Length: 210
Image 1 (cartoon, one colour):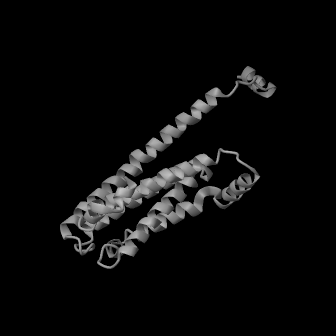
Image 2 (cartoon, rainbow, N blue to C red):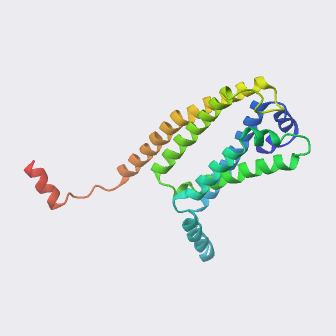
């Protein structure tokens, strides 16, 4: 699906339909997410001493995951500036269009590959902020005036704004809730598997006093 999204009829249709162009970007980003998830799985493997050293350096570089999080946000925002968004589909800018796709893919893979180094609280805030940003961006596209995305037809701008605001709202609300709920369930299951230890003498004393 990822390969089909960047070439052939899929790519050609994105050049004449603004909403489809946005959908193309989502497919590329989710492709990067999948690769990043695969990279994150490799962290649990122990091959040799060189791999262990690389993992230690990678973990130190990605401490907190802030670099990857900031990079993805910057790239996503830049390529959704109307002038930058439409510049890539102008005749003669095929190379720029490919660069845009490569940056989306690479930054998405880097973001997910760095998630094991992010705190649960940071990831929750990031999902909420990213969704809110998309929602507000879509609203601005709809009310800012027409022809922001020339040479696309003006009516497609409102459609694009609606899609972005709706997807951003879903990410900000359902996405954030789903992440918190699922990680909470996973944490509770992990705690249930821990052996129950005998209460300390101080705890026994407090219980007796109560």
